[in-house]
Length: 205
Image 1 (cartoon, one colour):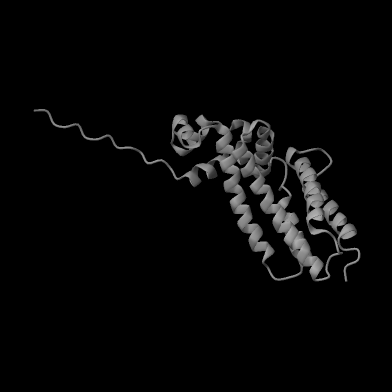
Image 2 (cartoon, one colour):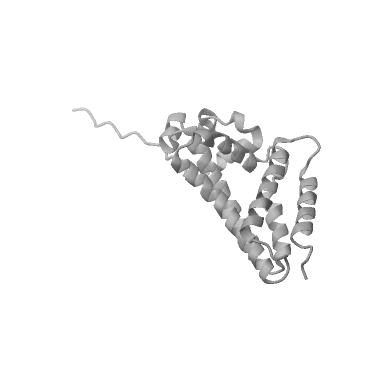
């Protein structure tokens, strides 16, 4: 009678968060073009097929990585916006967090790719992207409304002003993230400070 074969040990898959963190690290180190299911699998000790089982597609992997990165940024944004001080100081902190650190900032690199792929995304993916955008917008609207109520800012429609300010931030941030010549993070922050001073603080007490 032959002995029963011992069950094959399975190597436990790394937690989803570890995979997403590894993906962000790879984007930061090598750029998005070098991030493939095979290369990510080698980094975390999983096969590309195993990754596809969890994430279904590279598009889904990228969107989940963005959601994970946004979760961390959202926590930091929440911390900054609840600090003591003026609404003007907290608005400056919001802008500082929004603008990319420089050329090929990994979070903005990922955002640009997800935006690009959204043309062919399904409704669920579009809704998830809108949820990320919505969180930034709601926080900015609340901050502007608070500043208006305290007399720090001019009496503006907080929602409309937030939409315009974020459009300005997005445009400048894309320039920084893609490394457009003649524009850097410091220049962007200066432009935005000037815009805020002229349009939001001109009549503040």
